[in-house]
Length: 101
Image 1 (cartoon, rainbow, N blue to C red):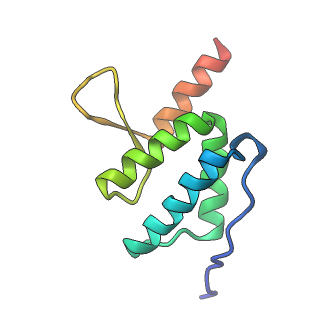
Image 2 (cartoon, one colour; image 1 turned 90 degrees about the vertical axis):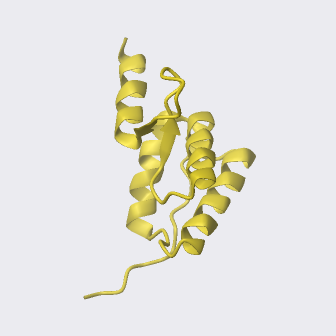
């Protein structure tokens, strides 16, 4: 089986802000520290989804997930007020619905 590439892709222009770059670097380090390093294909697909959400939501998701010590991106569900999490697919669907409304 070929070795996975650890070279990460460039950030999409929609996410290329100082705040996102800093949080993304923290996210990559977090993944290394929990022994779940980010690989190039995984990062490419994740960045594509995060670009649809924008930098502010993406940063919030990474911050929340790192605080919880999790490996997958999640965001607290503000509507429930009880700290439940929405998965990334649900966030992308919600963002897409708002754009198309």
